[in-house]
Figure 1 (cartoon, rainbow, N blue to C red):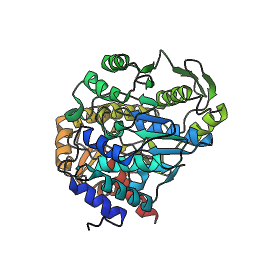
Figure 2: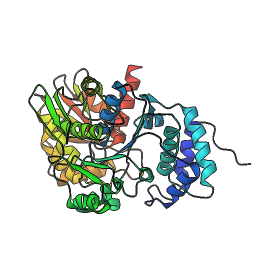
Figure 3: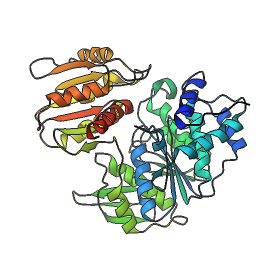
Figure 4: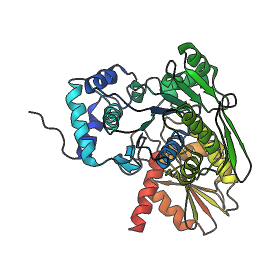
Length: 429
């Protein structure tokens, strides 16, 4: 009799090595195992896809629904320090033992079907959330939408936050191609929300073709505001005098407007009062999204890893006030538009600390240096490029050089931010 691993780490190590490729697009295998597991939801499901803004949108939904007293399940990814971050029930991470038990069930159901780490863990989390007696479930899509493992679930409300160029090898190299992939999470007769101010025609066409109830930003819902507060207007619901979300950054009102549109669409099943919306927006917390750490020098953690996200980060920098010098801790996957990210950030950074990341498909520090040189990044008394073998080392160097009026920006990948989070955690213990 074959035994399964008895710790979460052992399980994850097995899943990382078992399937012949890391990303294997297509839903037939996942759907077959989902049917065997009998995953069904008795509560509303909200699914969120998009190039950027998915995590913020999910976090705001969770915070508001928790404030309203609902039992909320959330699946989000990737994680920074612990795999358990990927599944939350009522705001609390799921325990190792619950994961182990559910992994055992997926293992028994899959038979000889081979699944990637992402597909296997997605089914496990969808299964444990389906059995947790919840009032609402929020599912964050990983890559694209149409062929993402999460899309074996039928959502009551689907949100596409933004459509931009990323994951070109899998999703295509234009916004129209990518828009079609994201629109794959929409369902016939159900609410489909897009908060991108310029949605690709392919997304609109697909929603019309399948008969989804499409809500577009600027047509079906929008917001306006001043420096103190903002107002939301949906199809029938208005919410006025709202405080700004505690998540900082330029696009958060677009994300928040999509959240309130989704809650309007579900208001018969999940009624929510004005104060609960205000409290949720005020209390929402999301690591690694324009996260400004307390203390000096100023440290900003941001998972920006494509030009669209880097442009937002650069804009947020402009709103931060004066810093004498800015150091970048920058590491990236090789399949990203590294030149596009550098182009957005070039004028904002004085000293680049580029680093290797602990994955084979990451760019090396030497490759990042080469891209910076191609972009004509300066090297003189006040500008530099240094190479490091890890984000932790790059951050330690930046910290040793930065004065208290300087700024350290950590960006380029989840792994870059995770490395610095680990370094900061070990400093405080």
